[in-house]
Length: 379
Image (cartoon, rainbow, N blue to C red; front, top):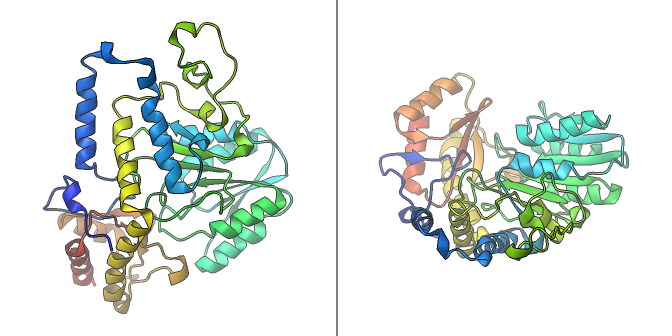
């Protein structure tokens, strides 16, 4: 079992941070890598052509290990919206409707909404209303048919952590020939993901949450459906002759193979890439399975203490230990409760009507007990 990794971070010891779904704290080693990168900027004459590409290949490799893909299927992006821009720039019309879910994160929602409007495709939003997680997932799966062009959704619901049945949805999409596009931001790095087994066609992840990367970096997986596509920008770095600096004006029309064509311009990002690489290395070292087990241990303490007090949790089959919501009794105002948490230096998020708790390896049992204490005092 993985032990608490708090000593690898510079978190303020006087606070309880249960908000990795908002933004991950920077690893101490990530800080050092950034300072080293800044120092390297003092002497640009030391830069060689290969320095522009080495770190990006390492990032692609480390991320591919986490999601079960090949490094050539990974693109380095500045944001999830940029990733979705590349995805929807290369989707063929092959159906009469597309599917997303209620309260999908805006980056994905606007991407599919605008694509549908542009191509006169009906966008169907699958609402949960009062359905159980199991019933809601079944409704999503049953909505997919031979007329479905695209299914876009998050790997778990970003507001409350409800698990989405990715395997069953991916299988159905493959069966009917629909594109399966997933925003993995709130689970990749904290729970196991295998894009091949799940039949995911494109997976887009922000880097600054569960991947311990910097803001303004994201990563994307693009399946073979996209390997001959057209990127949304024409970067010189994404051409097959990019390493030959003296020959760049012998304009090579050929993109780098597979997902490399979708890399953002100025891919190297000399200051931020070292932080991203360090985060991915650390996740690979810990092992996603071990991170998952550690979060489950802490989440189980919360459940065992608070469920008897009428705090509601998602049903077990659809509960995510790293990100979940506290279902407060109706007599407790969520906004006032959040204010009380802030006053006690306990930081988490209010999303809709959900008190969202997000745990990672920098949390320990003391953090959990502090949260439980405030909840009990509010009942």
